[in-house]
Length: 178
Image (cartoon, rainbow, N blue to C red; front, side):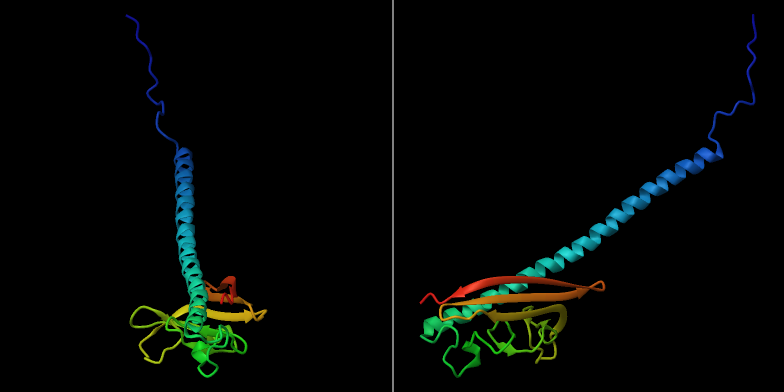
């Protein structure tokens, strides 16, 4: 019988270099996955605020349309209301703000048009109760190109987050359809 000589000192395990390379590849993969997760969380937050801003801008336009429609229903002038009540007046001198109750606020700049959430969870420009919580959003209504039959309405919502200013603007034309 023939004896086969075996090498007792053969290394069948991993070298330290192979272990370091494997750990490096695993760590690199984990870092890229964590970076992707962090980026998705940031994008989700920005998209959430963009969705809120778009709805606030649409609400601003709808509130002005509501004032126009109420003026028409009451027989007032569609733009200027009854002439004595500023809550029926669509056209303001300069820029203005409007809340869900139809209250119109003359303002000079969007920084004066901050939105609050009141106790009923509605957005408003007024914090008279002292219990409304401040939000990061500002809404400004601008009327331009005013004629006897049309008005160009712009509603701009701005907010600041993570050191950057963001803005969403919606433009529409209101018609005197009477």
